[in-house]
Image 1 (tube, protein in one colour):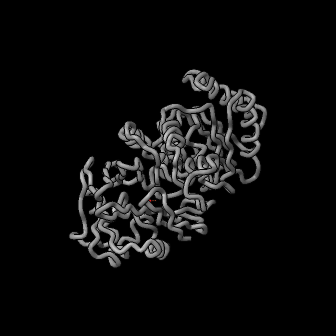
Image 2 (cartoon, protein in one colour; image 1 turned 180 degrees about the horizontal axis):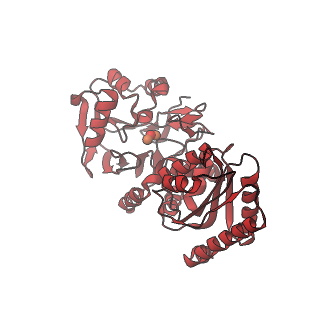
Image 3 (tube, rainbow, N blue to C red; image 1 turned 60 degrees about the horizontal axis):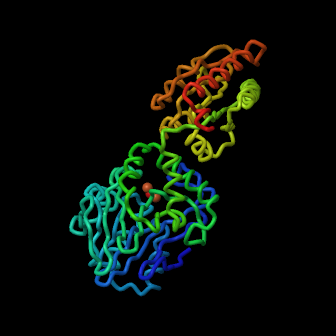
Length: 399
Ligand code: FEO
């Protein structure tokens, strides 16, 4: 969908809404589609386009620029080199040959590698550098690792708009230009944070600190609706990147013949009875985005698996690998499950989650269907989790 709309006088949204996309990077589910936002800023003397769109939607961007009768684009600001924002740059540079790409030094080298854009098309900007468009000033803020190393933010000083590209974005196709339904956007933005930003939590903290004194009326990301109440998303990010964890246990599991399922069912009841929130995911059916979101806040993960060919079930390995890559702020981990005649499930699974800075609590991996002693072992694991959460003030901190 292409509809050019005005945010403020001489500032337009000119990107595209992709209602149909259901998978990103051939990995990430997009239950609600997405958008590739681009913005046109017309100054008294110069015109800038901030980011472009995914190459699959470049016709929408071009149509929007035509409708606005844009004859000249002096600068294309590339906040990020990933192709869902930069992929239409070559086409834009064909249409507006005098245009120059403005970006960080790292972004320049990535755009040359990824899109074969020639060296003489670039203007490099330092952190804190400003550009005048006449009556409007663009201020460039280097913000590495949200979520690639070359990323920057662009602040339009006179209008107090921060263009953040992926930072604060949400994969959400909507006809609304601004956030109207905060609950829906919160869910989509949290999913986006969990899948894309969480591995860079510490870098994001620094970047939040860097912009804390900016006067921001509008945050305009390059995915999802625009925030005209920026505190909504700034506070959400502050919460997600904080070191605080919640009194929650995430249980991703698979069961083939019911033994592990019986253990999971019993164990979930034990945790709930102890006042602990549980988020249970059957990995045979789970949307991995939901699992990633649950990992944003939880204190503990308990992985449930049967033994397959001496190791964990492959779906469990996948989920553990993903959790390891996403680096949530978990504090504790354990494993429960069952085997028929033996195996190395515990060693293999703990070997997959080495990035997680967790204390491993004694696993409960049993032979066959759970029996009385096995249920007592699950009781003890639930007690240990409760005690650990108390020791770390996780329960107290929730009041
Ligand atoms: Fe939306 Fe990192 O690209």
